[in-house]
Image 1 (cartoon, rainbow, N blue to C red):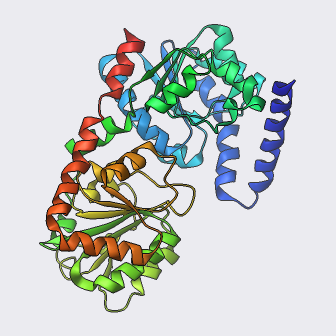
Image 2 (cartoon, rainbow, N blue to C red; image 1 turned 135 degrees about the horizontal axis):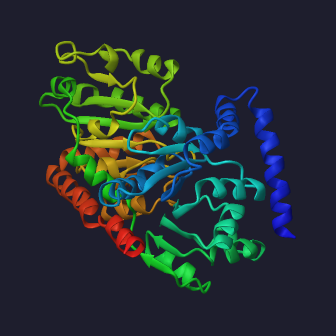
Length: 410
């Protein structure tokens, strides 16, 4: 009965998104992308064997899947990799990724779509990354006996399926072949529900960010811009955090060089920073090794640079903590630096760990950010200590991908 209600709710959800698509760009991409998924799969995958299907809700989860994908492509090259996305923010950026054999939106989670999808794809192995548990796809996988896994999962006792009303979904989850979870609490939560096919292996993102450090881009503009001045970077920032950063910059002036990379590049955001008086502000697209020397603030107006930018930073603020949740702190941590984050961070295991180490510092205002930064400037040995703790934390938690591969592909 509940599954029937779920299917009705899915259909209504699709209609709401279709209506939103008339005004909302992301909703339009969501609808248009899914309208093409089956034609794409029929053309590319219908006659292909040995497909590994990896489903990622969005771009962040793709970064968690990436180490596994790279290992499959390197060590198990007879397999083809299909990546599906729920969100346009993942698909639109990775749709032309040369590492991937096939990429498409995951069709809406109806029984008919799940059957048709699996008839076309016939996956040998399936990996769902972190969450996004779609009932009809899971039931169809289980009915066909396909091996399906969840990687980099994290569970909390307030999740829907741990409550009485979510028991129907917990029953479906209990038939997943194996859960590879991030922490001991997640393992405990599953064990208490008699789900014993679980291993604590950590988060595959640690493997990803360590790989980034080996392949970081040299940015001559950053070298010319930074010179011998400490560099403060605002990464994946949103408006609330940017307001705090502006106050911070006004307070410290030329004590630092500053880089700001907004999560979404909007002209209004770029102009907001360019209006700062007493600052020479330069857009990255207009920068060169010569004019970057005299600039105080470098505003990033393109994508794909953030991980390399962190390699030049001495201290970072990571955005998102005043909205739905903070963005990737590990990319900054792997290069060794103190990190400031907003208050909405409890759902991110790595953020909690970094705060326990003293590396990540929660702030709610510009005044708090300034106070903590003053302390770091007065105690440089503490600053150096945090840098070491930061990079060591990432190195010490790597290895999840190898454990998953050994379990699945052996």
